[in-house]
Image (cartoon, rainbow, N blue to C red; front, side, top):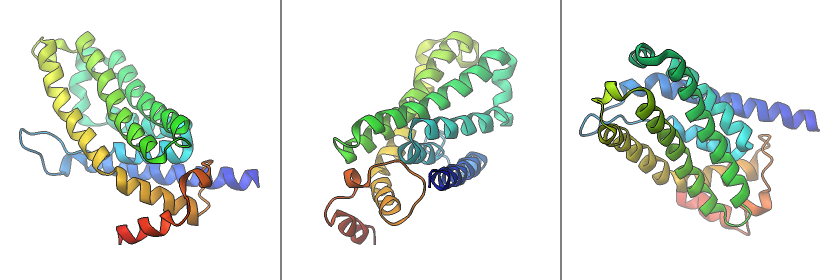
Length: 209
């Protein structure tokens, strides 16, 4: 039984890993927002994986995102500034974002499922962007014109976009998670009783339809 759960857990994480890879590869082809801001959806499957598979699942998905960023040609400019710092920073920020997103959800979801989802959705871009801002201030000031305010302004604008996407998708994430946990054995260790209560799953499915 335990082996079966582990296999389903591995399949679930692998599926989300594939989604992360596809979203990261196609991010450059998505339409730009006003001001040239990027529209990125890559953090969404990381949050979903962190919720379904805990801090470890979130960290694995965050690491996959980091690898995709490291091999992206646009990262070359950061390698030229400091290759070691770039590798460490990229891996640290997205891996920590996925891990902490899963950890906070795990601590909160039995108290309030919806609050836990919102917190997980907020903490992921917050940690990802926050650590990058710290790294940028330490190693890449010249790339951003030398000013800390410029760094915060540029990176902060992208953070607001990522945060907005995650928060707006929270209701959809809640419904998807309820459906997956209630109807399918996907290897998650979540307590179904803490997520699906009474006939709320039916109401949520009706709302989605």
